[in-house]
Image 1 (cartoon, chains in turn yellow, cyan, orange, brown):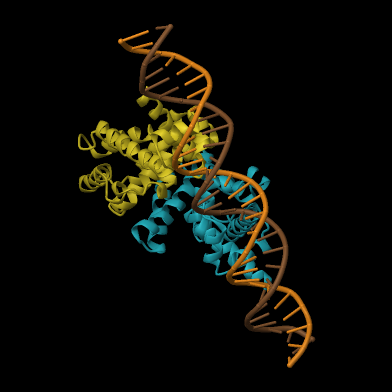
Image 2 (cartoon, each protein chain N blue to C red):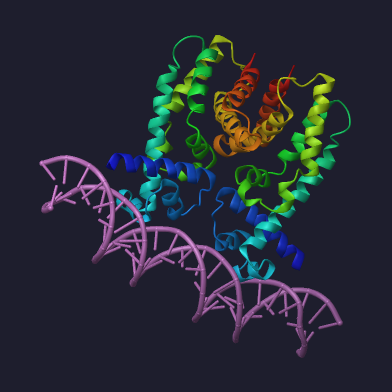
Length: 179
Length: 179
DNA sequence: CTCCAGTGGAACATATCTGTTCCATTGTGG
DNA sequence: CCACAATGGAACAGATATGTTCCACTGGAG
């Protein structure tokens, strides 16, 4: 099935490129369990594959944001939900964070809806008085992504469980932001 | 002078590769203001250059660690000093953190003296009761590097000043670790 | 001034990756 | 069984990066 093969290629590409952004298409093909020519059938040029990965990740991030319902309930609990959803992005999270130069489409230049939702949530935390007013929203935004990235890195390096690592991430983040 | 050219190449390579780990030797040469053949005179193969960068950074990290005197005074103040010293590594910090796959010499496999000093300092913070006992030392170690990386990223993205960015970094880190 | 270490650049061979074409194989629905 | 869409792989051409050789130039030490 076309859609099935396409998904396998995209997933394998994210997994492969998140570990080595310079990996060749042969590497991606091997990881996906398909021939290299098949990749070219779905994505004529390398840049087409990169663009498709970016679009795919944007969709996943948007879906994760929606699932977290960032506008509902207390700001800190909403932020927890958002982090949990983003954490599940796994390799995609690593790729977006560690190789931002790959994500250079026009859609990435402007602030995405997900960016805006996070910024808005942080500002809500500020006005509710539950997020340290001395930490600017853009710093907090970077801190959130950085902590999530660190959580995954901790799993890779220390072999910690997902649950354990996310727990440390959320605990550290909450304390950072506390008033 | 030989040593002078060598330094220019190493510094330019760190600056260039920290922005794009796949940059060509021509890019590095241009950044260093030397010809490409000159690079090959000092470092016959690309891998020789990478290795030299790694060795150079290990030395710089060791020197920074020594300057911070991590064994002296209260643990939290020592950690502050260490962060300030590591922060000054600049591009080298970005490279080590964001492209660890480039640093694959035998010297990087084992725990470096700097790693041990940081772990020891964190454990001292634990026994002194000034670092949250629920945060394992290896997590705190990754958190420290992650925060420093985030601080530099914040400078690149938001155009913040070094002083301002380091301030946010230290404030966030101290609060994370507080008991 | 003269020598020469250090350098830059042209030119070349080689390796790797990319992108394309062509053909054989597979397996699935009719 | 047959038709056909999907795939894998061989083979090829082009682009780019790497590594080498050679030669001309320059500026400082003697």
